[in-house]
Image 1 (cartoon, rainbow, N blue to C red):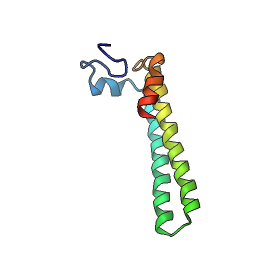
Image 2: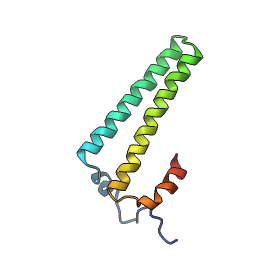
Image 3: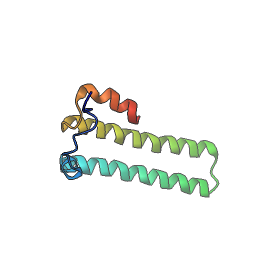
Length: 97
């Protein structure tokens, strides 16, 4: 295979890839990342306060799920905007998930 559909041709610049996301997509993804950031900060605070491992693990799971949801939203966005062909989603998930 000469050019993988996961890897755009060299002529595609970072700017053109960025501009493929709508303003709504960018806001939604940024919002998800900010929530996940808040969860990670809360986990650090729990550890500093000496909270039990069970409680910390529970909060880490929530933060991990928030990042996973953001990842899957990005994959969907990439498909929607033609950055990855639907038939290549499985390969992308295998690579990054």
